[in-house]
Length: 288
Image 1 (cartoon, one colour):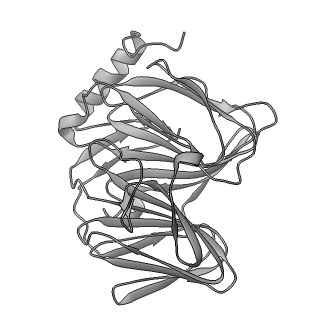
Image 2 (image 1 turned 180 degrees about the horizontal axis):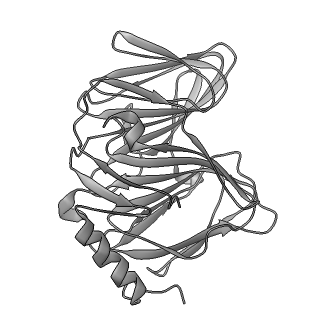
């Protein structure tokens, strides 16, 4: 969805903790977002490339291409109405509140998404990196309905296990480099703890309310819009006196250099040029 920047990543974190409040992004009258980019997190966002936390009230982006990455839509539960999703793989469906759509563009495919009339979409658009050996795979996609997402219980807290495995429970498994994604709701005075793999990076975003996150011997206060990334954590605990909403991604870092040009990610500029040429010539398919 974000087509505004070209960037590179060396892939090796130089610190074990980074944070950002993102950058505001607006397009037309129907799209407002806070955008978080990998460059702001010193390698610790890996394997994520970008997260846009957005509200869309009218169709904003026309048909566009992706390549070399997975474009993932995470619908938050307070969305209203339907988010119409189409792609050149032949998928045509409405996403509802709480749904997930994983679009592995790989060698290149077309995508179109926008609100149905009267809808207010509150969601995350996430770019997930692909390992170099999978950037030219056949595109694929899958949909997870909110009703099929398991829930984990904490102390006056619940977490939707949108992706991955946690607490002995298995949710949907993303292809290639699996992610764990928890959509965490903490009631006043509540607490939630996630136990994960130490070699996975953690990236979290405060959606609503004030809370505190603790990992290893570190901790940080969270307020809406603040994102934190860190490495080498096993237990990650969240607590809130007033109630809060937080999302947590955990994944194994790829630590592979890449070049990004808007919605494309490849290993070098020549590969990006080839993808753009394929798009212009119609070789990435169509939505007709």
